[in-house]
Amino acid sequence: MMEKLIIKGGRRLSGTVLTSGAKNAALPILAATILTEGKSRLLNVPDVVDIDSMRKLLSTLGVAVSSPGEDRHIIEVNIGALSRLEAPYDLVRKMRASVVVLGPMLARYGRARVSMPGGCAIGERPIDMHLAALAKMGATIEIDHGYIEARARQLVGARISLDYPTVGGTENIICAATLAKGTTVIDNAAREPEIVDLADFLNAAGARVSGAGTHQVTVDGVDGLTGVEHSIIPDRIEAGTYALAAAITGGEVTVSRCNPGDLGAPLEKLLEAGCEVETSEDSLTVKATGRARPVGITTQPYPGYPTDLQAQWLAFMTLADGSSIVRETVFERRFAHVQELRRMGAKITVDGDMAVVTGVERLQGAPVMCTDIRASASLVLAGLAAENSTVISRIYHIDRGYERIEEKLRALGADIARKRA
Ligand code: EPZ
Image (cartoon, rainbow, N blue to C red; front, side, top):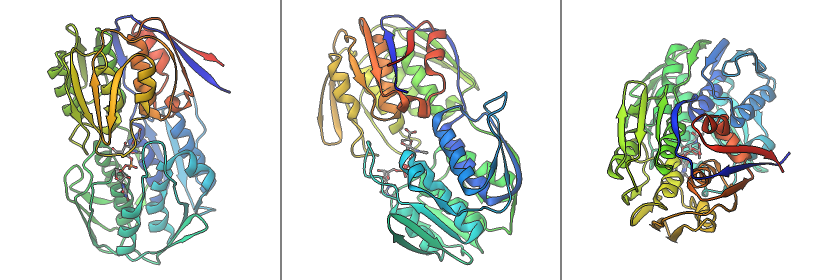
């Protein structure tokens, strides 16, 4: 069923919005349950479509996954023996993050067959570093009819130096290393908060992972892991998106149940743009104080400005008082939102990895189309600030990563509705 979001823009948002659990922490942690034996209970899991896809993938492998109960934010899994060691094309095609089952399956069962992810809307996204690291840990890896075939009787710890701090790669390697023989050291590891959450889950389950959140992660292999209860960290990207919703609409919004410490770079940029920002231990408040000053960003691995908030920042800058430069260094094709924002009257030119945004006085509502999760969020932000109605189609992209976005925005005073096309 095709659905659309219809936004009548021009309302200043105000009030408080609750942050959901982090999709990008919950996905690898759900995959990591494959390493454990027995029951795990995950709390604060976001109720989004990508989580449903991971649920489906785990069921396909033979994991007993609880069906959504009264509280849709709790998932219970019971790991016995897997009945199938294959992540099929149909599921990986829909969600690339499915490849994080590779490390856990290989480590626990000595074998994994995972559909090779293709390119996607935001870039090539190869997984060469995941595969090279697993090979260094003793796995044989072959590509067969579009599938990665990985085998290893017993993985062995290794020293792995990543050319780039890949998030998914770091997660796959950490998972694989928990049950490997000996010690694995990952240099130039990704430092994202989601990596720390994964390590916390694994350590609670009996793993020995240290240094998560730094450039060097060390994993001492253990014989087995047990099921545990774990609460997923708040979604920093969702929190940042609502902070930007306040900024772009000239409003004042408190984002609660989040971790402002995970949003250092974006909050710094909001201050530079002229917003007032207040933080407590688990909430942040952003208040706009007039037209935004133009402020450029360059996306970087954590703790730099996140690529997952680039499109939203760009939307904000379309209404700033001057020109700014948005550089995307993480993914090579992550500017699909630009063409849609232009349809709303934004002035943006793209040259390679750089978008030059010249602020305009107002955006006009228009029919626009989503291309990926964060590009969609930027269209929602633009629609909230634009004159008249914006009709956003292909919103399944939004539903992959944002829980009940229209309800949350409506509670802040937005005029937004979901309609069947
Ligand atoms: C994770 O993707 C996130 N996904 C992405 O969020 C996020 O944008 C990205 O990290 C960067 O922060 C999940 O956590 C599920 P990478 P991931 O491996 O792990 C290149 C969203 O909207 N690379 O750090 O796939 C790659 O092509 C999504 O929620 C290789 O060249 O990101 C990219 O250019 C989108 N070879 C860069 O590194 C490899 O082996 C970063 O990718 C691995 C990656």
